Amino acid sequence: MESSAADTRALLTSPPVGGPLWRRKAFNRVMTGLIVAAFAIALIPLFSLLFEVVKRGLPGMSWEFLTGTPRGIVGGGGAAHAIVGTVVITGVTAIISVPIGILAAIYLTEYGGKGRLRRWLTFFVDVMTGIPSIVAGLFAFALFAIFLGPGIRLGLMGAVALSVLMIPIVIRSSEEVLKIVPNHLREASYALGTPKWRTIVKVVLPTAFAGLVTGVMIAVARIVGETAPLLVTTGIVDSINTNPFEGRMQNLAVYAYSEYRTPGVMKQASYDRAWAAALTLIAIVMILNVVARLVYRRYKTEIK
Amino acid sequence: MQGAAGATRAEVELAEAGTQSTGPAPTPGAAPAEAGAPSESRRAKTIDVRDVNLFYGDFHAVEGVTVKIEPNKVTALIGSSGCGKTTFLRSLNRMHELTAGARVEGSIELDGQDIYAKGVDPVQVRRLVGMVFQSPNPFPTMSVHENVAAGLNLNGSRIKKDEKDEIVERSLRGAHLWNEVKDRLDKPGSSLSGGQQQRLCIARAIAVEPEVLLMDEPCSALDPVATLAIEDLIGELKSRFTIAIVTHNMQQAARASDITAFFNLEETGSPGRLVEIDDTDTIFTSPKEKATEDYVSGRFG
Image (tube, rainbow over all chains, first blue to last red; front, side):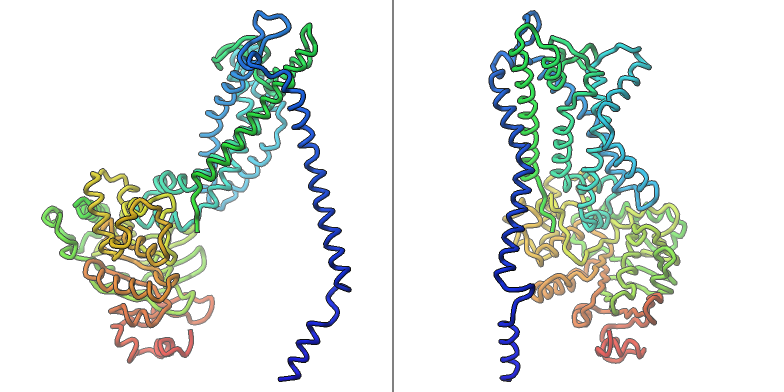
């Protein structure tokens, strides 16, 4: 009908919502600009930090840095002992935290039900994710002091302290990943006459595998640079120690701190080494994140 | 054939564990004789339901159902949404109780053996009563081959690779899927089309040689062509299994089933009940209850 065609035309050509079109376009442009600017400002500290660390860390970086130790060398040496220590301590932490964290997450998702117990447990895990790292360190220190006397320094103590920080992170991220596994997959398994534990091991965990690995790697990246708990638990030492059950163990974070705090005779060299240690730590974190992404992409399961 | 021997063993265990072992069960001696023979020679089982009431917590979902699911026949459960057909179906393989707070009252017997008796393992029940779901749900981390063999792998059966391959091929042939996937057995299960995925799920369900096959709206997520393919498949499978299928699609019930059971609600919030059950032809041409007649002629629902 002509009248409705005229109506449509009138509606389409009437003044746009919110004022003239140019005003709306200008508003869009201003807001876009503000958002982009805010994002850029947020990125400035990150890039500035990366730039500084690279700039100051590169001079200290050398083959000797990566493979030598200060032992026997006055005012010099390398950080091999710190690198080895970081790897060992982080490894032991992961060995402790990953099974405990993932099993706890399995309990919460698969067996916890909807009850109050589960809500309380999740709440406490959330609280634990906020524990200050020095508190975790003091906890480990006190714990070992009860059994082994004060004054003990062990790689294992550091690992326990870091586990207190890492376990809640693993639990939360694993819980989220397990929740995403659709229930109809579990039902399909039950309908075949599969017991619950087998369903979890053979269906749920493989489906969630990529997400679980990513969660663990991100948790590791989070704790690999923790300094405070390691200061009070693993001590400062000059030689390589690969045994977490015996003796002090150096690590990159504490090394960076001690080189800065108590530089040797050649101050600049010590500072260079501190920066190089920081650069190494950042490199480790970046590598972990990249590996996490690669693993995720390779192993993720498309769920319809 | 490991599958048959395993299932028969399970039946014997069910019978021994339960308190009412009055019904006939195939003697254990019969199993080896049937090993290797096509499953047509095995008797599909009857499900005897007597005065079953189903609850979700305090909510009374289904009341007073008494019905017999006949062997080697397809029984269709029809009715409007929310009237308890799926809830009822899920009580037949003890999936209903997986929901927190869910409860079953009454007696459900598989070939004379009460599946809810004390000492009966629900896992064993589910091996004998298989289920195919509304949306195809192949396991995403497994290949086509692994999906079909999942029932065997997941139960930790120690079956040699050759036997497993044979069972997989037989199940895929039985599900009319073999020719389409025989060159793609190692590809992920989710790489198939919807209709193929559903047939894969059916192959997976029949690979463990259940006595009964329950199907919860198996075609509702599929296009008409795939739907007809599956209906043909159901017509063939009934010679080997007892089949119960929930469907919203009345034409499908009319086409594919031998017996039809009509479920209904008095009003929203009241429990669903079985209104009428009869031969499919009778239900659709001369039903006894007015509610049934209204439903099948499209006057409501």
